[in-house]
Amino acid sequence: MTRSILLSATAALALSGCMVGPGYVSPTPTAPSQVPFLEAGASPAFTGDQPPGEWWSLFGDPTLDTLVGQALAANTDLRVAAANLAQARAVLKEAQAGRLPTTSIGAGGTYARQSGATTGVGPVEGESYDVGLDVGYQVDLFGRVESAIRASRADADAVQAAFDLTRITVAAETTRAYADVCAFNRQLAVANDTLRIQEQTFDLTRRLFEGGRATRLDTGQAGALLEQTRATLPTLEAQRAAALYRLAVLTGKPPAEAPQAALQCQAPPELDRPIPVGDGASLLARRPDIRRAERQLAAAAARVNVATADLYPSISIGGAIGSTAGSVSGLGRSDNFRFSIGPLISWSFPNIAVARSRLKQAEAGADAALATFDGTWLAALQETESALANYAGELDRLAALRRAADEAGEAARIARLRYQAGREAFQVVLDAERSLAQIRASIAQAEQQRSTSLVALFLALGGGWQAPVG
Image 1 (cartoon, rainbow, N blue to C red):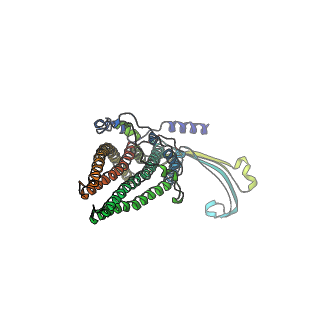
Image 2 (spheres, helix red, strand yellow):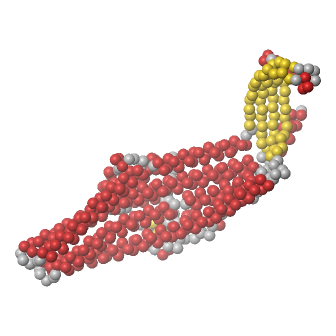
C-alpha cells in the first residue's frame, strides 16, 4: 500500500512539471525581407519563380550532372560534414535519455570486524554479502531535462544545416571547376584561331617584303604580335590543368584520375532562359546558413531555460531492492530482503549566485545568437542582390564585347585588304588585328566570368539543399 501511494505521488509530481524561462519564437517569419529582390525587377534575365533544387541540371549537360553526382557522393568535405551530423544526432539521443530512469545492479561480499563501540555487544567479526537493484528518476518539475533536449535538438538541426551548406558549396564548386575547364578550352580555341590569322598576316608581310613592297619593320612587328599570342597558350593550358585537377579532388579522386570527359567541353555552360530567383521570403527558407543561425538561436534560448531551471530545486525519486546476508546461501531468504523508496531534493541555496551567473551567461549567449541571425540574413540579402547585379552586368558586358568584336573583325578585314593593295600602312593592319585579338580574348574571359557569376548567384540563392541526403 505504501509503495503504491508513493508511486502515484511520483507520477502526479512528474505530470505537474512546468517549464521555466522564456518561450522561444523564431524570428524568421518577421524578418524584414519578405519582398521581391531589387535587382530581379530591374533585368529581364530573372523571374520570380522558385529556383530548382538541382539547379545545375538547368544547363542540360550530362557530363556536369555526372560530375556533381560524383562530388556529392565522394567529396571529403561532405564526408566530414556527415560525420559531424552523426555525432550531433548521437548527442541528441544522449540528451533524450535523460527522460529515462537510471538503474544499477550491484553485488559484493566482505569479511570485516566491527568494534564493540559500534555494536554495543562487543566486537563482531564475520562475512557479509549483498546484492541489489537501484533505480533513480529525475523529476523534470521545472523543465531542465526538456530544455536540454530542445537545445540538443536545435544543435543537431544546426549541424544538419551546416551539412546542407557544405552540400550546396560542393555542388557549386564542382560546377565552377567544370565551367573553368570549359572556359579555358574556349580561350585556347580563340587563341589558336587568333594565332592562325596572325600567321597568315606574318606570311603576307614576308611575301611582300621579299617582293620589295614591305619593310623589315613590318615583318618584325607582325612576328612580334604572333609570338605574343603564342606565349599565352602555355599559361592557358596550365590554368586548364589546374581546374581539371581541382575538379578531380572535388569528386573525391586524385589528380591522376581527373575526369577527362570534361576536356570535351568547348564553351562554359550558359542558360538560354531567364533565371528563377524567388524572393526574400523563400531565400530565408532556402539558405542553409540562415537556417543554421536560426537553429543556433533556438539552442541558445533553450539553454537560458536550462540555466533558469538551475535556480530551482532538483528533485529525484529513488528506489532500491536487494538482499543482505551473512552467507551466500542466506541471500534468498525473505527475512534478509530489503527495499527503500523516496524522494531526494537538492538545491544550490544559499550559493545561488553561481546559478544566477550561469543564467546571465546563457542570456548573453542568446543575445549574441540573435545578433548573429540578424547579421546572417542581412548578409544573405546583400550577397544575393550583389550576385544578381553582377550576373546582369556580365550579360550586358558580354553583349557589348560581341558587338565590338563584329566591328573589329570588319575593320581588320578591310585594313588587311587595303594593305595588300598598297593603300594602307602596315601599322593600321597591326593595330586592327591587335584590337581584334584583345576583344576576342576579352569575350572568352567574359564568358568564363559570366559562368562564375551564375554559379555565385545560385550559391547565394541557396539552391541544392533540397536534394535527398545520403
